[in-house]
Length: 101
Ligand code: TYC
Image 1 (cartoon, rainbow, N blue to C red):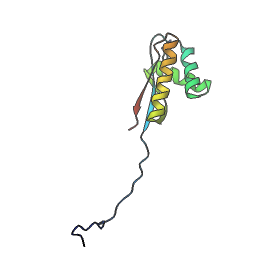
Image 2 (image 1 turned 90 degrees about the horizontal axis):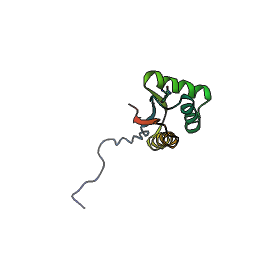
Image 3 (image 1 turned 180 degrees about the vertical axis):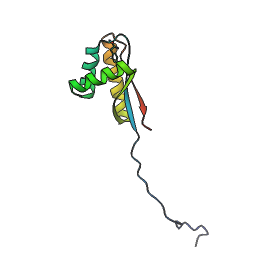
């Protein structure tokens, strides 16, 4: 018999944690045309015209607006896609991401 007793002592708690969600944030600027921002929001985030307009106007008035929340990888991909569409059209449109609390 070995000297090492490997029997588990006490209860082992198995916790499955949900992956932390990340916010995609639309950042206001002075140059991207409003209609262009609405078009990008609709194509990348599949929101209605009405919601896209509200998100754009919130960012326009307050400086930023949370567009949606996703797992980190999807949030980063969507933020990059929106920012890239702006760059390709010559606009400084910017999306960032940050983890939810
Ligand atoms: N502020 C821009 C304008 O007046 C419109 C705009 C809104 C740009 C939201 C970016 O995230 C943005 N043309």
